[in-house]
Structure formats: C-alpha cells, structure tokens
Length: 82
Image 1 (cartoon, helix red, strand yellow):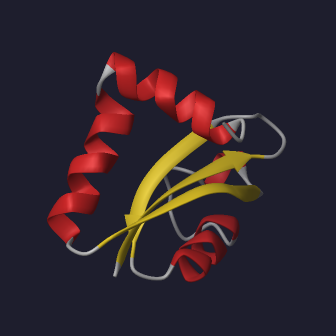
Image 2: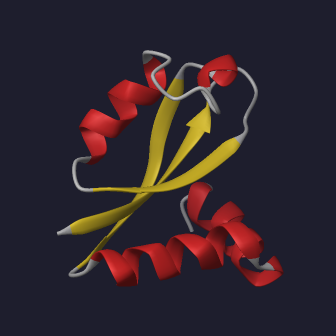
Image 3: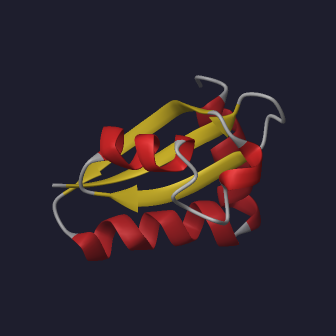
C-alpha cells in the first residue's frame, strides 16, 4: 500500500505533501532533519493521509495536490480537516 500524506510545520504553518509506504517513518524523517527541503520548518504534525494500491496512483494524487490550483485549494481544505 502506498500513501499520500500532508504534514504541517508547527511553527510556520507550511504544508508539505509527499508519498511514502510508511507514513510514520517518513514523519520521523521530516522531524529529524533527514529531508533537507523541510529541515528548516521542523517540527511537523501529520494532518492527512490517503491510501492507494499502486505507487503510480499515489504519485498522480501527490502531483495534483502539489501542482494544480484546484489541488492547492483541496490541500488546504484537507489540512483543515475538511
């Protein structure tokens, strides 16, 4: 199973979308500074996850949330719990 996740930077409120097989492990990596692109915004909290059968499906969804105007609005709504 592959997952799309959204994490929020606790101090700055910035949202980050990614894919992973193990969401909790990936969250730990974000919070430990493993990922250079998010290290400056630590710590993070997990705010949303979705599960997909294939990596292709998960990456397509990740792209939508990261790269389209509609996806950006949806990302905000999902992170707010909606």
